[in-house]
Image (tube, rainbow, N blue to C red):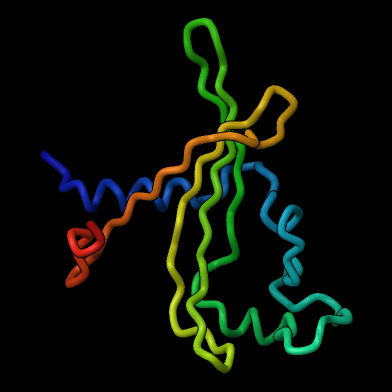
Length: 138
């Protein structure tokens, strides 16, 4: 049975975003997420004028919080350690309301000391969906 490429891509994205059994949720630790483990907003903190508070940001969020996981690939002669992040970028109107979110997956090769590489090539791959083919972006 041959699985169509769009289904394989969707499956890969779901697997990359799924938490590993027994793993730690790195996303809330690294991003300073205003949401506690129970899903309730954290205590209100002071914020700059004009910035939405944590509660309105969480309510307007259409996709889950970013998921950050660390992995390694063992190759002959070396081991590559990398960080995978599955998240979303909000598209907002002038009033700050979230209209949509664009999902992304980022893979970053880590240095020996565990930090991200300061000089690395970046590539962007766009894929459309039903009615939004990526051919329009080329």
